[in-house]
Every structure is written in C-alpha cells, then in structure tokens.
Length: 285
Image 1 (spheres, rainbow, N blue to C red):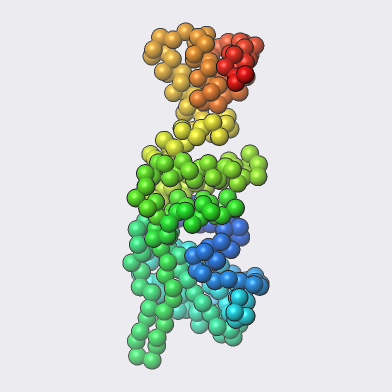
Image 2 (image 1 turned 120 degrees about the vertical axis):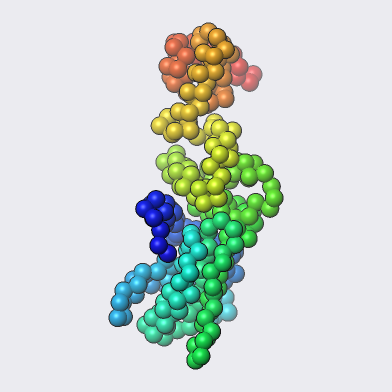
C-alpha cells in the first residue's frame, strides 16, 4: 500500500483485519463467482515468501481446477490505488514461480470506491508482464447475497448497488447477514465488521438509518446503535410531554426498539409486570 497518514494507516489496518478474519470463509465464493475459477483441489501455501527478502501476500494456494490444470493462485486485496502495484505483483510473480516452479495466476481485487486506476501491465524491452485487476464496485451486490456464508454476504456492501437505493440495499444486506449468522456472538461480530467496511463507500449515514429500521434484529444492549435508539425514544417522550407510564411509550419500547421486558421497565421506570401486561395485550391472538 502507498504512503498513508496516521489516520489512513489506522483505517487500512481495520479493513485488513476484517479481510484476515473472514478470508478463509469468503475467498472460495470470490474465486468461483468473481474470478470464474472452479477449483477441485487446493493446498495452502505459506503467505511469507523468503528468497533474498521476505514478502507477505494476502492469499496463496496451489490449486487444481476443473480442467485438471495445476497452478499457483495468488490474490491481493487493495483498499487504495497504489502506483507501485504493478512492480509489487511482478516481484511476487518471479519469487513465487521460482519457488514452486508452477504456472501462476495473479489477481488484485480492489475494494475501494469507484473503478481502480492502477496499472496492471508492464511492457518494456525484454519484459512483458501483466496481472488481473478486478474492481468490486463493478460487480452486482446480488452476486454476494446469493451465498450461504455470512462472510461472503457482507461483501455486498462493497459491490455495485445497480442504481438502487443504498439504504434499502444495506437493509437487505443486514437482514441477510443476520439470517446466516450461527449465533448472537457471530451476528454482532459481522455487524461490527460491516460498520468498518461501509466506510469504504462513504455510506455511514445510510448504514445508520438502515440499522434503525432493522434494530429489532440487533438487540445487544451494549451496541451503540441500540443505545442510540433507546436515548432517542426517551428524548421524544420527554419532548412530547408523554407520561413515561403511558401504554403507548412502553409499547414502542418493546415493539419498535425491541427492548426486553426488563430493559423497557428500566427505561420507562415502571414494573416488569406492567410491561408484560402491555406486551400480552398487543400480542397476536
């Protein structure tokens, strides 16, 4: 990655951390759907290559595809356009091919905003080199939502929304990710990761709004969006002069914000029994 200021490096590290955490689960789908490679067999290779100097790569596998061709698959993930990327990839190519003596297929996947402007070829006297450059922003978000894996579904927020309303798309992604999460712990982890990834598209406001619309799915008490909704409900009640023991206020706490009986009772300063009576009254018969 090119030179970044301290804040830029911190953000890049966050994005890199998300990719590292989800790489094993998300990459098979990316390879099949985006790179169009049908792998029958795969062996993990060390991501640190040491010949005369050590280089760390994002993804390196020895694979056999559906045509029974064996080769080294090398993938790099880029958040920013890097002017020196073509030289990095050429250096990786020589080192990997020298080490494993197999054909090498290289891909740079750009997850930043817009289309990448990185140079993907190097043609000079006696040297002809190129790698495959793919921009996530040019791929339909629906491609990733079709996956069964939440790590892959998350990538939809980095893809092309096809001129659809960003808030509506993000709401769909949130619901799809939640449906695929195996536990509350995993669900909250994916939610935190989505908040990081969405910054790459400058859609934080739309993400906040979408979170409020699907807040019933995310009831974790320590979640800042959850707390924001609770505060908002209290402030609205005070501004409108609503008695905190009013049935409508307690009902909104349980239905719109998704609070539990204990949580709603604490916010409205009423008994848990009072909340349960309201919940029972509005429950479908």
